[in-house]
Length: 215
Image (tube, rainbow, N blue to C red; front, side):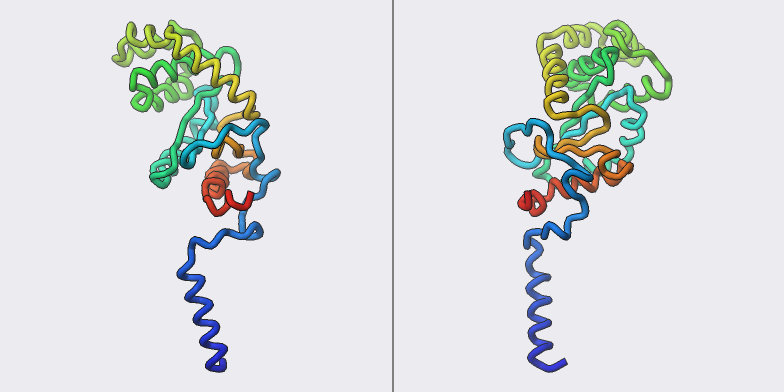
């Protein structure tokens, strides 16, 4: 290689190495709109920072199997990315657990009880589909039954439940687990190619500001 050619090659290599901020080219993106993810029916107004949201159901076995993948992924998210979990009723019988989720969230107990509710519904096959059944279960594991019922019966839990059902319809969420990125992009295991791990990679791409700049 001639000296001038070698110098040009080295300078070009250094420029690329020093500029990781260069926007990703559309052809370099692994996942494509309309194949691996889609724009939601009604995008929500932009929020400050980056937001990713999981829609899930305690009655969904796929959601339970997704948890071991999701948990470390959420933990590794950049500090400027906000993760939000949203319960989704697969049927009318699932609405009480959605309302219970918001009640426990208000009480500051949902993170401590999230996995235990999954275990009760999916492993122990407990029919937690009524207000009383859920209150009985929580009481049996040492939770304050009266405090739960007060939160469950509150206007806040009711309004959050109604809003969640409306949002799911507006966003076009009809199966779980589903990931919504920036209130605009929807992906599921099916869209991502039948893999829950791939669904997280799609979300990674959509959270990448360089990828978003291509849209």
